[in-house]
Length: 277
Image (cartoon, rainbow, N blue to C red; front, side, top):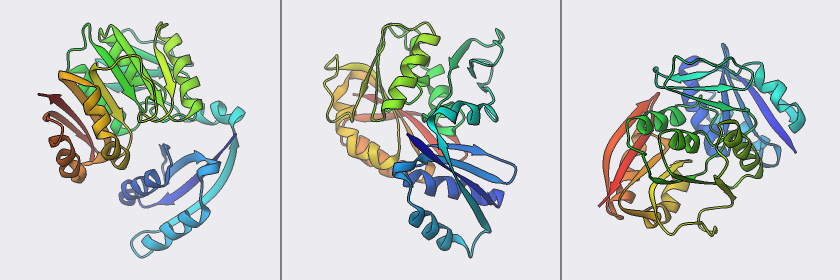
């Protein structure tokens, strides 16, 4: 298995648009640099033509230069550790890698082995959901984390008192990495399923909480499944889209008796919490 890394040099003000375009193409890990963005994607999903067309589309608006590299799976940790820093949600939560020292000044610490999985904590969508989780009551609740990636949001739910947590992702490496991270955080009994939510046989018919941090198109396609898996009075946490996408998302949730309760907006990325009535 190999990954394609593209090193972009571009104007800082264009980085947000560039990240959005790349996310739509399937890039799922991004690192901000002094000169632009480094973006990563499974090589089998990479299209040089799509990149070329995107650059041509914006060349009149911004200066964009890029270089393409291929990274073997075995080399990913070494590549990632060069730039991986802990992230924090004020003093309530810190996400760190195994090679960082612990810090007991935070209410919660989540420890991960960073690999090529979406959700290392650095993206604004993950941080937005974490904020919403920290402001919510998870005590004794059942939780389903859809598109769990590294498992950070599932781990956060467990640390906040959830008595049952289950996770899904379509990528086998995410499943392997997530299970490893669950073990690192002392969580032994979280089932992590590989596959799309529409095809899986889950362990429970209903959950108190459903979390989905994916992207707008997938969220809209799968909204009926999320709503159907929620008990009345349950909470749905959604992220992976921009502030201007809120009306489209809300039009979908309105169809399933989901009431918008809270929102967090970071760098134009949005995280929303709904209640089912």
